[in-house]
Image (tube, rainbow, N blue to C red):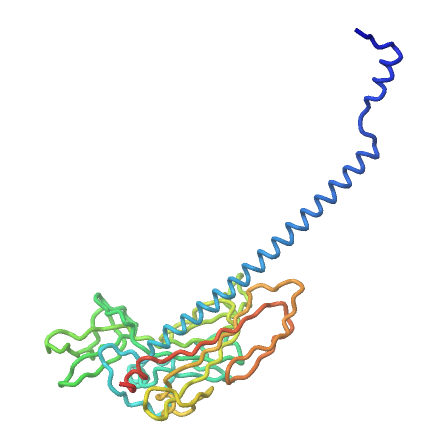
Length: 330
């Protein structure tokens, strides 16, 4: 067995030393670079995820707003069992008027619109209106039949038989029972005709979603006024609404021409289809982004973004007004 000499043992121990200060500083510097790279990667991934969420919300809001309008437009003019002709009023009715006379004649115009009005109709109700956008009025009955008590102050429609003829009545409920004018019968002549809620909705673009109080905002929003009530927000991020109306001049149920404003009462009764254009935008801006794009909104022409940081998208759809057009193409 060889035993190391004392000098060799001392030399071996002197070589077993720790890291020097320079080595520590190099290690720390490398670690800081790695940490900075990971932080930058996390920031980029978070930003990309946030932008993806913004875009997804914008698409969802645009599609949802279009679906809401589509559902109501397709049901416009529905009057329960009644499907006959209605004498139109002499002038375009006030969409927020809720007297029985106004409601009765208004059903002759299932669709009524306002092309970028300088001041909106029933302005005390159509509040926070965003200038330069269209308003759309839809009149129809709710398909669901009322089986219980009525709600006082609400508007209802009854369609049935009176004097051996099919007709309809629209009136306000004074209480939970049927209004005195609701005396129509079913075909058996004994049972009361069904009663449904009657709806007059004014769709428009507002400058805000939450418009008052400490949480007031400036998010453009699709809003609605129903039966002359207060304005309610529907879908945030809808910045513009433009509509082309298809007018049937040959009484075959198909539109022969489109315009942004049919004009006369007679033309409004002949509206059989709508081309709806919605401009949706993100609810929050995107840092470093500048929107200078031009967006096509049908016959209303193009609109150019104001060089802001919001991303936008146009949703367009041709929608048939089913009830009046179906009666003509039979």
